[in-house]
Amino acid sequence: MADVDQPLAQEHSLDRDCTTLSRHVLQQLQSFSAEAQDLSAIMNRIALAAKLISRRLSRAGLVEGALGFTGTVNVQGESVKKMDTYANDVFISVFKQSGLVCRMASEEMDKPYYLPENCPIGRYTLLYDPIDGSSNVDINLNVGAIFAIRKQEGNDSDCDACDLLQQGHEQIAAGYVLYGPSTMLVYSIGTGVHAFVLDPSLGEFILASENIQVPDHGPVYSTNEGNFWQWEESIRDYIRYVHRHEGYTARYSGALVGDFHRILFQGGVFLYPGTLKKPEGKLRLLYESAPLAFLIEQAGGRASTGVKRILDVVPDALHARTPLIIGSTEDVNLVESFIQDRARASQEAVVASS
Ligand code: AHM
Ligand code: MG
Image 1: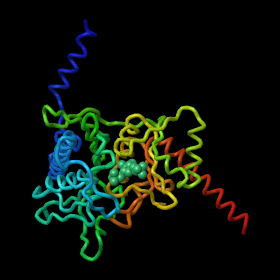
Image 2: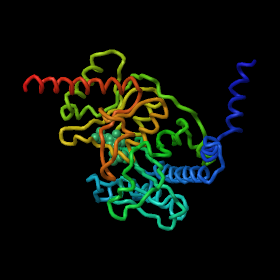
Image 3: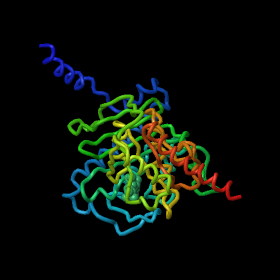
């Protein structure tokens, strides 16, 4: 009898005790201070942007002008999708006149976007990728959004966005939204990593998993092997290793958020290394790599360029790119060990020839 009753009891308590995102932020901070209220309000606005974007994505195939390209090219040299522009504008509109965020910077904007009406009250900066994995949009596969919140410090009166060029460990919060079969929001304010699912009937993100820990090792390696001959030999060594050893499997969706989400929950490693043409790789430090690095460290994993902790990298430009190796500690260590082996071998070769 007890076995039959148990699932029902759990279902009822979940229904009754559901924790919303803004309540969760306040619980995590254990405070009702102005700063805690600000962070809770910022997360609430991000959630609102996610709901609006989720609604548009879920009907994109039925709505005139939702899919396809705008015909323009962004600062990264990439063709802009209509959904990229829509999502970027949604983030801006939810933070206008919010009194929260003073400055916003995204993949889709050449320069930071100023919200002077929020300054000096709004003391925060939002860095974001409004649609991550845009190539998946038109074929109805998973996409995401990535965000980071930083304290707004200094100004850029004598330089180009230099006040935003800080190391990742300066982030005070980070997270992502995954638009998949359900819409999920995963975030950290430095007190662990927590996942929420959008309940469309309530229009609220409800707590689904708290204090997520990435396994120390996982079977998945996630990378675009089409770049194999563009990589350094050390990365090819690693790939040859996983091909020749049992227990590894490849998964790659073309959207970083989806691939990262799998690894966060099940373990493994995601790699986007540098290539011959682009030694710095493809992914952007401030609004892609650094926020996910913040999350993975909070979950007990690691994020590296191959030779340096991602959170210690100082960006030299707003849209700076960096190689990214991120996931379970043992798997990131393994990739790094191949990089170190090759570096040692080439140093020895230099010494021997001199
Ligand atoms: P985007 O933000 O413009 O979509 O670009 C980032 C995406 C990541 O989501 C994904 O991991 C990567 O680019 C895929 O790149 P590639 O097609 O070179 O494998
Ligand atoms: Mg992206």
